Image 1 (spheres, rainbow, N blue to C red):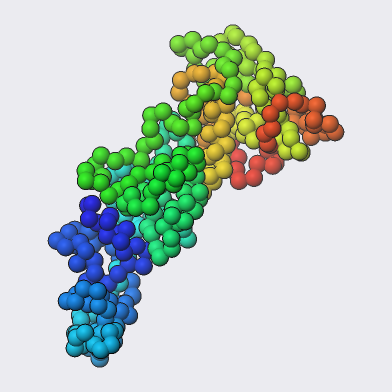
Image 2: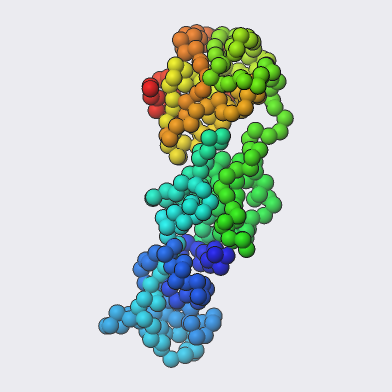
Length: 366
């Protein structure tokens, strides 16, 4: 398996004629051939008998080819080459996704999405304790590898990236991936895929570090998110759980409900999930997944109950607790009519709660 990923990294997106794959994979060619697919025939190829020399191919009336030396003078007489040796083979993203997904524990895409940066989306990793993460396989092309890695990691923000080898994965690229919450896995390892997993570390980087808000309750052992009621008021948020109450003004929450005519995204999300609603998300909705993640971190900092305050569905999310939706909608209408939004203090954030302004979300009742 190590040799296969090294060959994928070497031959890349353009692929190569069958004879080149056979030479690179040796005895393993037959085993790994199902992970490749045939395209057209090539116009030239490396001479299998004279390393470093190139043969230009011309088709004969039989359908096979003659290879003519590109060197001047010619390094050899014309070489007869079977047609199947001249067929260009490229990585088969669909079969690779199925194979790697089974090994690493993610759901493979039946129709992987190709990317101009070489980061092809081949699946999705889901778990009850983490947001869905798109899985991308990097297959290099002729462009500068460092630039391709940096551009692709930016595009795969909060996702999982699989690299055939560690080539080009520098400390700088690694720091960029960490900053964007991208988990990188190198496939070419001596131990094979059996010791790899797409599961993020147990202590997710997004929830690590010093909390930005102090907890408002000390949870009891039996507290659960479904026991929480959250009310959105003009001056702050009101929390009620198991007979305990706490009102937190916006300044204490380091939150600003409205800034520059837009409402806070966390409040917007919580308002839309009121009264048992849920949101559905396409795999491509990276922004939506980020908003769920920010809202989860916000709640878990204030009320450090174990488990997830959001309920995972096959196509999106709902909440485990109750939000007073009627009060939230009334308050939003007041905010929108307020001519002086700067009366609210704290830190700068963005956006809202208006159900008619939920771009990118589908709202369902159940």
